[in-house]
Length: 87
Image 1 (cartoon, rainbow, N blue to C red):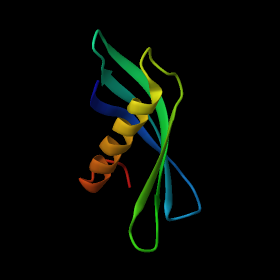
Image 2: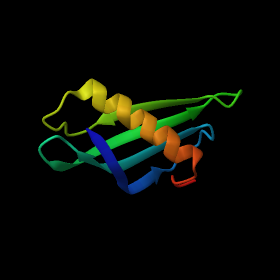
Image 3: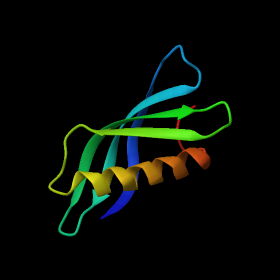
Image 4: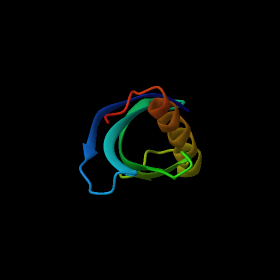
């Protein structure tokens, strides 16, 4: 399984500055097909700068969910560090 991209990323407005909430569509390259999976995720930043990511798969594909969530967390963290997510 490979995460190709996150598309249609929208940020939900909130009053808490250290918690950012998003919805997106994850493009996944599975062993037999490529699927678009709707997800929601949040990034919480601690006072020391550590990021905690929570991911919710809205419509799960025909693939184990735990490895999918782990891969999405890694991809989201990298995307956030590289500045590819909306501020």
